[in-house]
Image 1 (cartoon, helix red, strand yellow):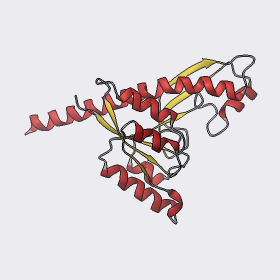
Image 2 (image 1 turned 90 degrees about the vertical axis):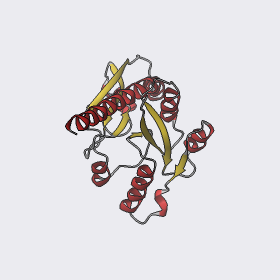
Image 3 (image 1 turned 135 degrees about the vertical axis):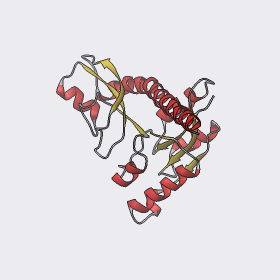
Image 4 (image 1 turned 180 degrees about the horizontal axis):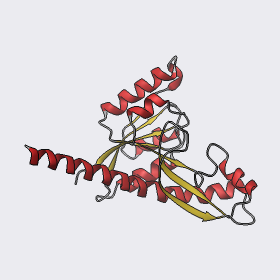
Length: 206
């Protein structure tokens, strides 16, 4: 079975990265995690990925004079691994319009709220302060506008009366670990089917 090649971008411990790696172990999962890239050399995710047999590299943003130079190197590293889809998994860098344009429609992000509610940071505290009854997470395509890209899917959880930002965050993270692999599988299948249809069309035309 043809599988989409995925590059995971991380900055920290990479719990969502691990959820994607675990899902990709299944023979019928339509994507493989081809590389993990961190912008931080001390990111625990690099060690974790290596232990699981996934190539892991650092493109340290601090060694580049500008964001443009950093993103150009990041772009080269992804293309060198023939990446089809990028998954952001706790990648703590805002991508420029140039980079997003290079990978338009192929960058996935998971956000810890039910977008369009609570874009940005501190989502769990803000949800509790707002008194919402349901909170959750969203997987969406990355666009030039932060946290505003097309939504692929969401997972909702009930907010409990005794929830704190930490307890709420823990339950949302559990939901993230289920939602992200499912959404990646959906996008990967769509890309594979579109590629096969394109190849079939060229064959018929020839």
